[in-house]
Length: 320
Length: 264
Image 1 (cartoon, chains in turn green, orange):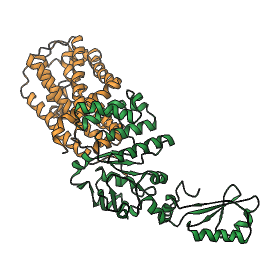
Image 2: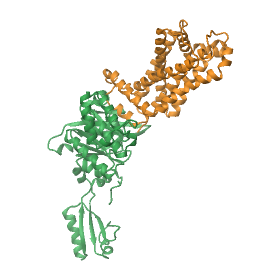
Image 3: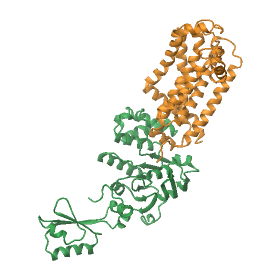
Image 4: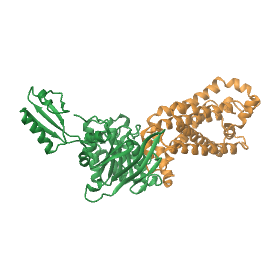
């Protein structure tokens, strides 16, 4: 599907075929295919336990698959692991900073391990501290940092070696809305410089707002892939909200099968694919019965609807 | 086997990380100094008179302190290695280790750095033990070359014990488990020539004590410090230490490459 998104086929930064991995007889991945276009943000979404983290761990050389192959910029993650490690940066679910070292020392540690020349490190360390709003806390041990600061330091460390591909495993889990926005801005900034980002998230709004491509996986397999817009077209979800004047709701709800009453006691929620013909049917019914509608709004399906339609799992954000 | 060209520089980086950790929490290092010093005071000041009386067969110039210092040096090395096992075990549960695994570095550096730190601490702790020993009346008669050999042997012992306890730290699931395993090298010196000559022990224990690795190390250290020829003890000590170091390194590298401890 993604081939059609931008006219010509984008180059693939990551390509995985038939990845399988089980833990103690339990299959975490069951033949996963994955394509991640270069220079864009791809979000990997799926219910808990669908294999998102296992995928990241295999692609970042932390884990060997039982079967299947994966390449990162053309290099096999199994047989060319050292080369792959030189191309990637990983920020995992659990903080990968040295708690005992200060923010600056953590970055210096990365500079040393990337064998950066001293002059480059001297320039890049304050740059990153500034960009990630850590300059004021640079000389404090990381154990004194807040969750958001630690996450930012984590990502700054990942970027120290200027990786071409960045893996982010649930980068905004546990962050407050402001922290999330800061991180989104950083990710967009990275992609603007040509970096490829593969992230996992449990927030579908995040995938919708941040990702150019979305891959939905369930039970260790890919069930859908495409741009957020393409995916939404595949969902039967979407709804129409009708707000009635006081007292008219009961009469109205009898006219529409499967209509839901909202908690405010005045609004009716109807399933609708958002097409003009379906809206006209609703309006015609209302006209025939002369029911006074105060307002009407049509909502297209969102990624939560896609998620539900394809996995049967209701997300936190769904059914508002 | 990643980027072996960077073996030295990556190990140096990890050694600096280890050093910074040690300086940020100096209590660990201070207690590492104090334990062998207390042990020395205990054996010399409390048990010393009785033990010396029982040592009439052994050639002793001065007090019991002359006999016991090498044994305490070896116990000090064991204590340092024990702390290394615990810190490696704790470190492995930190997210930063997963980061190191995804980087193009010389992989054993993650372990070799702390081992280098451990060797340095072994030598420093040994110096503290010697200083306190001299304060208690220990009179070393080592030559210049002898002193160098003492430092070298102590460092080699530290290297061997550290690689072994790094493997323990990787093997154990909890810091307490790592600690328990490290008690083996920590207590083995009791059944050696550390505190009493092996000749005074019951037959079964004696043959064990004579052939266990700590005995030639202690005898070599004792000979070097007192200026007495050490015969084959030196070579035996070096062989044991080198063997344990290589086996410990091999085992530790295997355990590390096995992958992260946690699944999922």
